[in-house]
Image 1 (cartoon, rainbow, N blue to C red):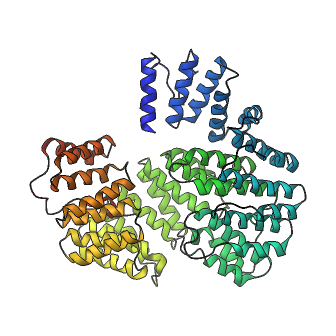
Image 2 (image 1 turned 180 degrees about the vertical axis):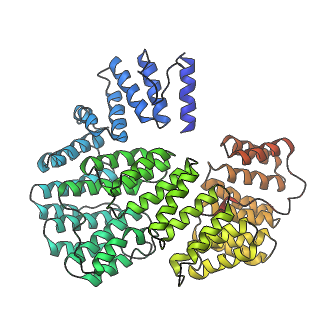
Length: 579
């Protein structure tokens, strides 16, 4: 994205349009031509400034009001920004354009759901061109449209008969069950919910959707009076750190005999759930634009939906928009079971803005409200770690561990983080004990294997065992560039430069945009006798805009090269960082 922004600015400069800016703080738009407004809109869009992008697209459209491409861009930007109602006239105008109908007709269908018009929604969900994702969305939404037309059985049958890739399974079974349950078809719901894949690790690809399905299943069983079975379903989420906090209130209600309300109450909520689930599944690096569109459509149906707000906040975090994330987290309703999760994340975003005192105060209040919530201590410790104050971080972890009567598997991360803090303040015996304790609680946990193994090698002790630990971590996470980098760095420390180069090259292929990994590869090339390649790699690492301290070391190497022999103690590899 930065490259696109620079290219756009270069075009503006050549066109003599540098007076046109794309900041949301600007006054009235000053672009005096179609090309100026259009290029400024693209610049703002690439910069993540959707408010300015909308203004410039509107200005460009005033020069060419019938331009279909401009209308498409403006509609998508409005949807991604959350201006749903403002996007609807453009969606109506574009509903017959095949290239954009997946969004224009979907937006109009969402509006039909708002009006409780299932028949119109069903008609609008018929597309000319459909990808696998479009098929999934339109069929699930059509199932809910049929429910809105008093045909719950038809909705269940449609969704249940949907064929497609294996990743459809969770969505198909989940929504078939929800439509059945909401339509009073208990036996169909009871048959559909257990079809979900509840094996350990089954929710790794789409954890948020998996947890929603777990919640729906538990609520359904508890509503039928099957309390023990409902609690057993919640136990299936034990490997997800967020689940304990997310389901805390629900578990307590079920255990006390309270029959919770269903996850979805009507067709409008069901359609919102489809869009939420799709947005959550796509909410990862690279998919932010589509994520925002689907989530804002969901929000048009459920303006105060807590899970929708949390997903929007997470998308903002991935876009490095901490202030926007704080705003979304702050909107999560006070009674929501996700409120505490939102408050914890809000504090971490304050820290990202370097508002450390405010973040600390916020987290201390959360700890005071629930002193046994380990996530609050982990969050507070991470704020101190972000400032490199590992002694203060270790003190926070001390407070938390003092409250753990019998450490269990779920507590491994607390000992791991304290071990990192002790290692950073050079209290190695304490660090080693905590890292071993973390492995005792969670055997073969890859982050701990990586950190302990590298720490041994870095100190010149337990060399064979250290290498074995890191290799075991890589075996579990072969596509984790940081852990692969750590293996390469371990070989480097052991003087096995050819092995180091092989692993470092693989790490860089997995994380090509990471400046530290590219810098490490340059170091390895240098000592492997490949000095021209080393210089190229350092130049590339420098161009990736690393942090100031890393940049200074790279520039020094570009001027002076490296000593004839590696220094005895190298920096921590990227793969050995805490987190």
